[in-house]
Amino acid sequence: MNTYHPLKAALLMAILVLLPIAVCAASDGPNNNRRQGPPPEAISACEGKQAGDSVEFTGRKGETLEATCKEMNGQLAAVPAGGPPEGDRN
Image (cartoon, rainbow, N blue to C red; front, side, top):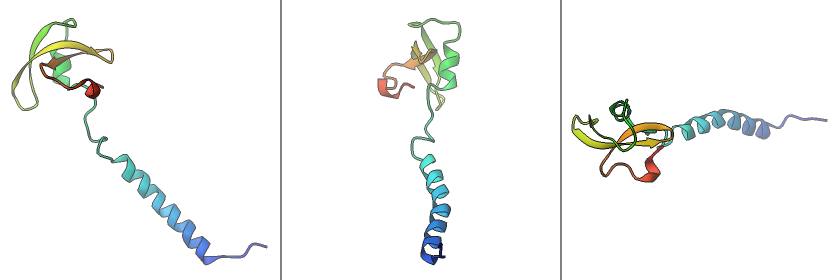
């Protein structure tokens, strides 16, 4: 025979309420707000170019950057001298 257990019911309710909150908090972690891949300006700078071509483009802070077109994940993008380390290229 099943009997009602207030403690079990409270525990179940707590899990049902807290689980979605925990999932949402985990999805808003520090890497989720980080831009993935090259910026649009770097991609536009290499349109009509080939890997290895030198280009200039305006960076996010308005500065002119000298760069080289490189293929990253099947996409050609301008990579400034001293650009992102290999691990940051998505």
